[in-house]
Every structure is written in structure tokens, then in C-alpha cells.
Image 1: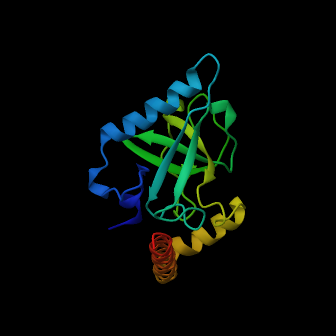
Image 2: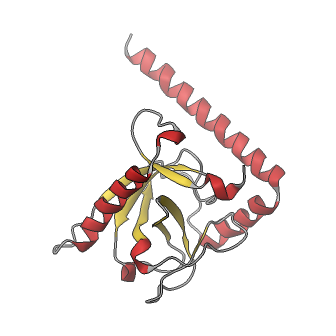
Length: 185
């Protein structure tokens, strides 16, 4: 399966959500919640937590990461920021690569070979405000893009990084479960 077909997000919940259960209705709910916050008279900032599925933003964001997205207006975002957009009932969390214009904006995943097609201005839903596990990732867009290019063009490096990531994540989950078991004794 190509990287392009594996780029989507799901609403975060405590249980593991099967990827196939994500739907157009779910992305529409996320879009409406974020748009409502951006359009409200008080500009009340709405936030949603989403679980990343896909590899297009490696190494800044990894599959399984939980991110917080805040509603915003198009004038609130700047090149280099990671933003959430909706197209064809799918959510895309990619980096804004150029200033927004009245005709729309362009995004690119850090480990993608090229830019996404032009998005219309109304496709912008929000911007990344934090990763729930703040201790990881790259804050430098340039470093993230450089490593992303390596992941894009070298499948072996990408597979190795993903394997190490899944092992680290499994080990951390196992440790948390053992700790919970000790607490309940």
C-alpha cells in the first residue's frame, strides 16, 4: 500500500479504534466542531484530540501519536506550521508550505516527495497545538523535512524507523500495564 493511501487521522478515544471504522461522518464531526470554534463571535478556541494514522509526517509525527488540534482562521496560520485540512471526507495533517492566498493553500507531508494539490480556503480546520506525548518529535520544520525526505526516498530506512517506533511503543505500553498491575495489588 502506498504512503499516499495511508494518510488519515481518527478521533482519539481510550480504546484502540480500528482504522476501518473511521468514516466520512467522523471527519465531518471533527470539521464542524473546529469550524464552530473559529466562527463563534468570541472566537472560542475549540480543540479536538486525534490519533495519527499514516506515515506522511515522519519524523515529526508517528503513527499512533495523539495530537491536539485547535480551531483557527486562515489568517492565524503561517508557513512551517502543521495544520489540519479536510478534502473528500478525509482529514490531512500536513505542513503549510506557503502563505495562504484567497485561492487557497498548499500542504506537504514531511516525508512526501511533493506537495498536495491546492486546498480551497474553507478546507482549513485547525492547527496543531501540541502532541500529547510532548517529549518526542522534531520542533524544527527544516530538520523534520530533511529526515522526511530520507524516509520518503529510502524505504529501508522508513521500515527500520517504523519498526523501532512500534517496538518502543509496545515496550512502553507493556511497562504501563505492569505498573498498573502492581498498583492494584
